[in-house]
Length: 98
Image (cartoon, rainbow, N blue to C red; front, top):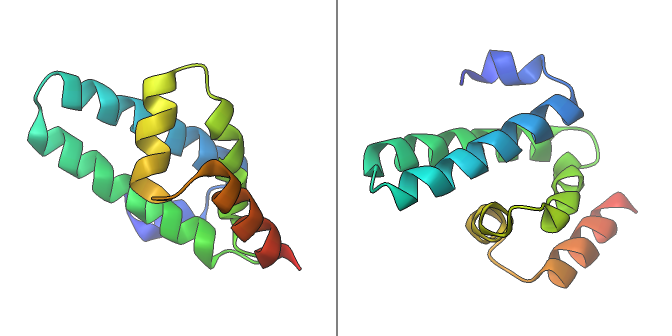
C-alpha cells in the first residue's frame, strides 16, 4: 500500500487494516504461501511506520489487538511488530504519551 494512501487513513482505519493483514499473514503461513506472507509483512511494516510517524506515536492504538479473539493472529501480529511482551509494549507506549 502506498504511503500516500496510508497518510489519508484515520488511526482506526489503519488499525482495522493492520488487523486484517495480520490475520491474512497467519493464513498465508498456514498454507505455506511465503510470497504472500512476505508481501503482507511489508504492508504491516508500512502501517506501523505510518502510526509511528503520527503525532504522539499512534502505535498505542495497536495495543487492544492483544485481546483479539483470534489467538494466532494476536500472537503472530504482535510478535512480528513488537518483539516483546504485552506489558513492555503498554509501558513503552504509555511513556511515549507523556
